[in-house]
Length: 379
Image (cartoon, rainbow, N blue to C red; front, side, top):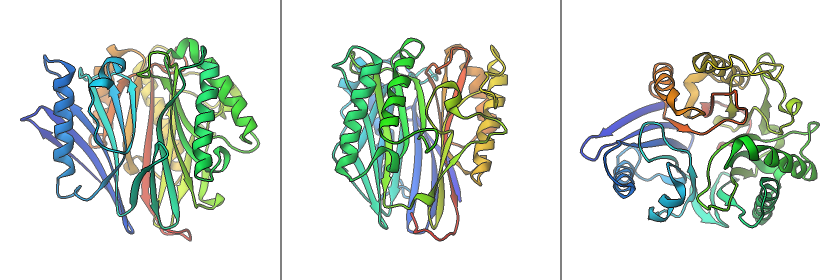
């Protein structure tokens, strides 16, 4: 069962929302850290959000957990990353996707208790019960001139990292996030390079692709056009992984030229995980629905996500975290109100990040977990 909680630290102007799930020997936590906007420099906000994180990690229910990864959502990554004095050794992503609550920074934390967590090969490696989970964030290339070539080079870097763990893209990669500096002009190069690399690695419409989000986001390196965050795993049987399509609501992504899965279900003896890719207001013919109306797009987006979750045996009550991407920051108040009503307790961050089609005004992704009993080894 998922327990969702939140706490306001009024004395420092910060708030944390977290969801905790326990089954078997391992506890998982997803947390979103927010800071109150004040008339101050970035140094003040990052100090306050890091203070809130420290308090959070010392809370009784959280104490003893290890941080697997962090993602910083920043308003000005190039100038802000050098200011962040990060002490944790976990894999970290810094991406310019401004939080739309008026602050300069928000943070997504993923923590586990009951596993071996340690840094290795530019990644965080989690080991337990014969599984090896590899989280690798912040990969990029700044030597090439185009998004096409930078995507290729970044994927080469990732393939080399996978090789160190005796893993491959086709057999072991579970989830990716591709951030592109200008999604309207540079996304096409990313898509082309990813498709070509996937074919080379045995990922085709006849085999499978990977759950993914491809979204606008600015790396801190001013010469980088593309950034990759990823999650891979070894030690599982092929039948433990299943892909979600919800063909009553969505079409196969290859039909409009992109190569990712709508969602991925990973099954363990004590729990199932679902990773929902970036999902927007689209129908089963690949057409954008409700052009120009963000409220109606949100309703259809929720319907699509719910269909994917149901196909994997879950529902919205099983969701542990949500990231919402908006093209137009002026829609924030409407979107915030709708999400607060629909998901009042789920850790959520809403950022400014254009979606890959100009007529998509909003996109969301989420991770869901459910307690089960089946024939596989526990998580």
